[in-house]
Image (cartoon, rainbow, N blue to C red):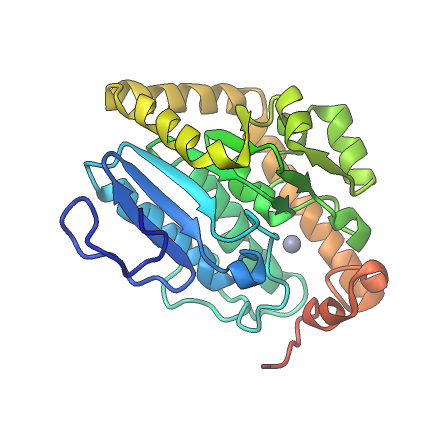
Length: 299
Ligand code: ZN
């Protein structure tokens, strides 16, 4: 499998797409979407968000693809959102929603941007019509959790470490607050309040991941799981996904997610009033204190 976009033709006979931050490859009935900014520990900038969406679009429209594996190139799955992205308030010409005007003042521009690229994007990927499997190794931090959690299954290597550190920066968790569902309410509160890390084994014990395997087994194990699912009838697989997601929604998952997203925006607005920065800068590394502000300079 080629992990870098622009490689050999994909399995459907079409040319590989030319993504800059994401690898895309189809092998048999399985598509591999790989975050490919290892020098940034796969921190997710706006560009990568849209390339991930475009790669999933390709996988959705390829009838040969039955299952998608989402992974990260290099030593880590994802360091989270890229707070140093100088282009983060530049809108693409066409978004996936109509939440535009990211430059509006007050809380309005940020609300639009985060609605478009974090909140609605997570919702869209959670509802991707084929099974998504996250293959997590190394660190999976902050916004990286959002990417793993919107996948249907998670396979982690034994060395995987998870963390949402943003309470240290004055935020009640990342934009997609699935923590209570993924960790259970008590662990969710503890791990958020302490900005604590949890291991792959702890993630397994609270039901957040499906399997923990050795790092050297991770690729083969995940592909074998994907191929097993790919043998099933596609209609039944789709309906299982809908039924389980809708069961969660009936338990309040979607309503809780909407509520938490707006509390997240309240915290950004509070920090902006109090510190003139959407994040409390007290514990932020110096290089991120500048980047976290709206008026970031071009490098
Ligand atoms: Zn935010």
